[in-house]
Image (cartoon, rainbow, N blue to C red; front, top):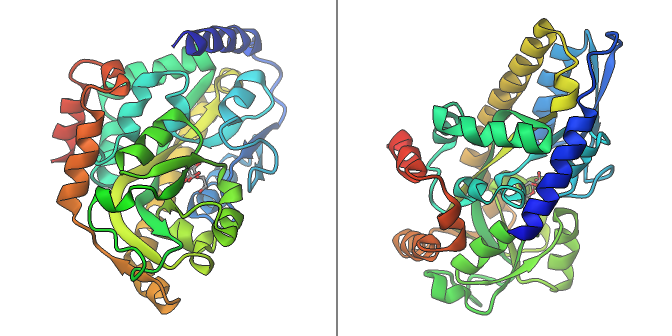
Length: 331
Ligand code: KDO
């Protein structure tokens, strides 16, 4: 936690330094960096919905496949003034603010609608304020990434995943932050930290046994070419946030701020509906590619994963009553 505090203190100083008074209103450039590809629905939504909506005063400049900023370094880049937007994750934010791990906990969010209800609820206000005040990042909207499942190189015949015990010894790639590694362990696997852009080769060469991402990502990143099965664990109904530079936000007029806010919400909704539609019909597409797709013992997975979080360092960081409020918004 000490490291986090030092890092947070430094970032807060940088954010304050960047918050210079409003300058003359030239057309601003909004550099956005994501590990996602150009065809990922979140990237498509920002390019096709957000960009045109702000084109009157801002030039949207997307950078895909982590080509400008490495995955998990985007928030600090925004803080430093080297980036204006990203598709951030609760797991990244949990590195600075451990309490964000509540939104990255297995089997908490129940659906895309639940994510929206939580993001728009007053319980989110202190979370959002902390990110603005200490990181210089404004969380404009919640994006639906999808239901994460366990995707393995091994055939179902070689390894059938029924309960977490079946993942013992499985080298499961998870993204590189502590919250992600914790989730990988909670599933019963041996998590390996790795950037998104390295997954395909790692699966192809066998340096990992599997990865966990939603079905649209398995298709978009062509993981189906180098894996043979998906156990539909739905262990995390995953989300991202449209992250925006607070220093840039503060230089906008109220009308421009309202336009940016609406554009982000409209893009998030567009991407959400497209991602949900994709999830609905990708099982048959992937079975057509020869993959075995099946449901494990979800009760066993849910109970095992949730038991790992109870009493964990992450759970101790959650605001009193927050989990109860989140659960109440989902039922
Ligand atoms: C991943 O690295 O598995 C992950 O799904 C984590 C998400 O938070 C997000 O960064 C995502 O990658 C990228 O947007 C690529 O889809």
